[in-house]
Image (cartoon, rainbow, N blue to C red; front, side, top):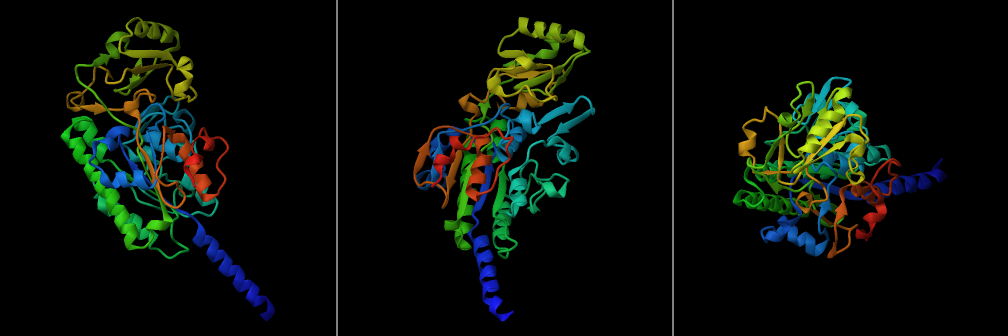
Length: 401
């Protein structure tokens, strides 16, 4: 037995060393941080990442350029019509159940999430993960959640969120997560309330830039700054809206048998089968500052036809215009900015910044696609991605060392 002991010890040391060599990645979402906010000369910490790491001209969201669909696209590498979360709010017409991002009872049900989140892929292949907020991370099925996760609290101080991330990195080696997500909403909130060109929005940029600086300071304190990849991105951009640029589709249709889902940049319209064509014709006849499509005729570049939850008629507003029903409330007068429009419009694009041992230094590139981030993460960790994703590694892997 004794002659085998040194070999056994070497095996244990080798296993520990392999675990120690696994990368560390922190994926940070700055909700609604538009691509050009970095050009306002008020974000020195983010500018330092541009100098030291990788920066993209913009990050192209999926359509619709909404919060939940795009966070799920980022973490699964799939278009919304494939991963299931087609809007922030939508209805299952067969189950008569509505998915609402504000309703944790529905957002935690695994039935909605058809894609595999990166933390699921990672955990199956031996990578411990954690989430300090991310849509989809609170699924009730334990095997589909990260090892560690915090339930979303909108008012949780930003510094507390960063401290939580750092505390995970201070855990013993065998319990420490190597992939961590974090989420901050400031630019989205101020963009909606005051518009993307407001002083309040500039304050939000400064606030999040300060949080980026705080994160790096804390990584310095635990001596992990040089061993952690930090990716800072956003799910979408923002554009100006006005209550003078509204379209009431309910008045145009004028048929109580139709059901209209959601207000804003995109509406889904259900109608009895014998009325679908007439509803479409009415909207088409009055088409002004919006486009109307039958579901199967939505342009391919939107990738928004495949889900059974997408209604037979789809209406997409021009940027800056708002689709409403007769029930439009006070929010219409209060909202100064919005998103969800054509994802090819630059106002809808977000940011992508990355720094750390796996990324090139001082490297600037053009527009990246957010569905490509999932295969990028798989490449960094050296694990196998799902084969049914829409993301393509070849569109993004050149930013790695």
